[in-house]
Image 1 (cartoon, one colour):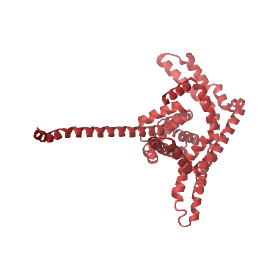
Image 2: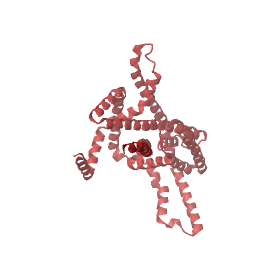
Image 3: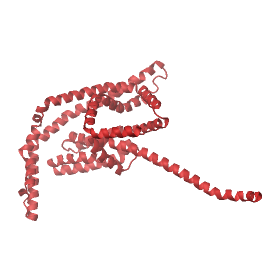
Image 4: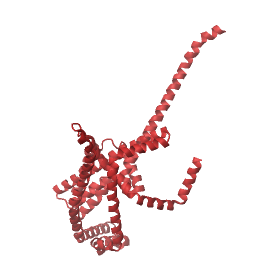
Length: 400
């Protein structure tokens, strides 16, 4: 009956896939605040544990009545610490980012001349080498016109005007996002303050309605995923923040253009394992290349040294053995996760795959150990068989 029900549900799912997706989207949009609350609570649980289990661990030793302030004080300080840092960084970045973007837009005519000069040099080189005029090729001419014509400048200068027709929708989406995240913050406070009770209730329900073998295995799987994902996410956030800060300091020392804009790009792209340095480094280098090729070259060298420091010193110190998979599997998990879920999949694909890899490795080791044990027992039984047979021969002769 279970197989029949599962098969029927699977067939229904694939026949009405579009309807199922619509229903899932409606459900997700309704429970968005809860999902945001879970994400915020999961991330803030780490600074909360730092305060609760370490900073205020001995708070009620001398005065018992102080012990009851441990939890609320830890929660308040966790939120103040995290959101205070975020607010401070945003207040610093927004004016600088606005200045960098404005500077970039103002420099568009110079960029057009630079691209046009490169195109002319390339076309002249190919013409001298092969006698083939690239400007006679429609595709090449159209690309250069698109990159250097008035359309490119107007696109960057008038990008705000293109958003006007959708201004109402944009404002509604922003308002909905603010509402969901605000409600998510409130929900996260309740989740952190009562997490022991909620987890205990979940354990009791699962243990009551599932076989013991299943519940034990399920709790172990949750523990592995929590360990791998939690350590990786928090470690990667800290690592990327440090790399972004070091990039800004280094670019300021060497007087590169757009230091804050590029540092934000490098820091955010560093969250993506394996491909992150390329995703953030290539557009940043191209941006500097339009200004000064030598500056772009020195930036590439600087970024290479910075990524070597991150990959060989800083990253292992912060992340430790939280991943536990080789570079090949990291690349595979990033590609698959990015293909299925975009940027979020690229970031979370590695810890999820690492958890699955750890569980599969445990299952393989357990099965191999059982097989080795059975083989050893069989070999021992076969080795004992001749001895037993020899020992039984005198008894058989006496009986005869």
